[in-house]
Amino acid sequence: MTPTRPFVHLLPWVALGSLMALAWVGWKLRQAWRSLRAAQRAAQLERELREFGDLMRDADRPETHAADLTRALAARATAPVAALLQPQPQAPDLVLGEPDANALAGLQLCTASGRALGPGTDHHAGEPDLYLPLRGREAAFGAVVLFGLGARALPGDLMAHAQALCDQMGLALQRQRVHDEARRASELAEVQTTRNAMLAAISHDYRTPLATIMGSASALQTQGERLSAAQRGELASRIVDETARLVRLTDNTLQLARLGAPGVALRSDWESAEEIVGAALRRVRRRPDGERVRSRIEPGLPLLWCDAALMSQLLDNLIDNALKYSPPAAPVELVVRRIGGDVVLAVRDRGPGIEPAWRERVFDAFQRGDLADFAQRPPGAGVGLAVCRAIAQAHHGRLTLRPRGHGGCSLQCWLPLREAPALPEAM
Image (tube, rainbow, N blue to C red):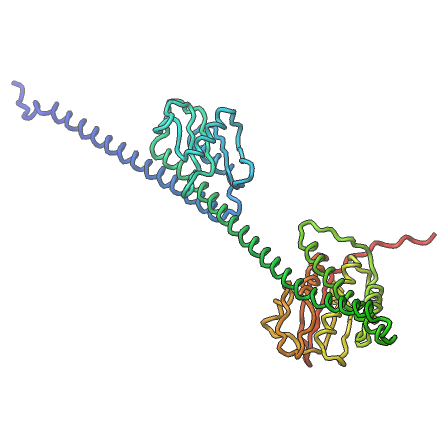
């Protein structure tokens, strides 16, 4: 007889249970794998969005990174991408890629509406191309188009990621616009302040010499025959002095405006420091107090590559400033020497000096420092030192102020030396 085998009839059920268990384990593994892939994809999208956000936050001109945006979208959507950006309200639109006329119209419509258009959206869902706006807080500042999607809508997470990337660019463009508008407003306010200060300076500092000239000329015209030769000479001298003062003020104001303009060109040539200083001394000797100016020039100085007219104006201003702000009997020194790779032209006085709080501000236009030490306010509009600094900077140099140990100031113009061309040998 065949021995009885208990539970044999249960074997099919055991096998079925094992298969079901294996299927369940496989399903769970697939679920875990999908969850892992989804988590990895989400982490990758988050990292990409964070890195692009950091790039936009640090960008001075966000539009220069528009190609990074289009490359990121093209890689995610596996579709060609074009973009239209509006960085500035009055500037032409910036177009990337090769959109045709229909695509350009779609980009402009998407920008104007600030809404996504095309497959997977609630607007123009039947269109084959997807348009995404570059949204800021109140408006869109451009749009991108993903070509040829047809009825294939982007997955939800990818659509949200693409729109988030576009919004990062839109917010950066809006932030740049706000920054540019604030800068333009600040420049406009500064220009207005300068204009008001210039008008105030002109109305004050022109009025005094003009009144002197008018009074002296009127006296010569109406009473010339009754005046002595000495009196007529004094009136004529006043007219000459006040006219020269007006000429200096006008030259300084015009030069300050010219040197502040972009792209200013100097009429530079190889000049001798001795000749520039000698011409300045000849001019100052015509003044009644010009004999106070002494000069010392280091021998063997190389030629200077400079605009001689501007350098003459710089020395005239520095000497005039030193004579006005120093005691009547105190000497004024003009010293020229070489220090390292620069030639330094220094004008030194023995005046009351300048308080530390004013040592930078005196180089600003229409700033004259603290005049409390003067019983009578020295004439001037406060443009001379501003012009001197502008002249030094136009020559790639600098103008500095150094207080002197026994009182007074030394204003120093540092001019960088250039290698002079070799002279042709005599035949």
